[in-house]
Amino acid sequence: MRVEVQKWGNSAAVRVPAPALKDAGMQVGQSLELRVEGGKLVIEPATESLEDLLAQMTPENQHGLALEGPAVGAEAW
Image (tube, rainbow, N blue to C red; front, top):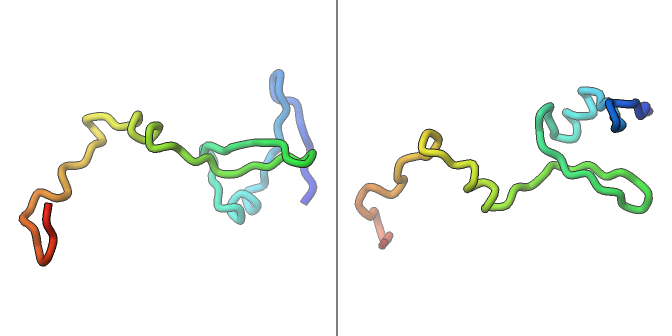
């Protein structure tokens, strides 16, 4: 599929058609990694480090303890 690079402020933008976005398993608003590889632009879903994920935790979005009950079976903690 052919798309066109367009000016967007002081940058450039490429509009990604919805079917291509869906086929790539991506969605609007998702963070992406962009790099140049062999003279080509490569766009992939961004992966967050554990440190980044933990930094997003707040008292409002923390879950309660998952292991509050007694051990069941051969479990020990």
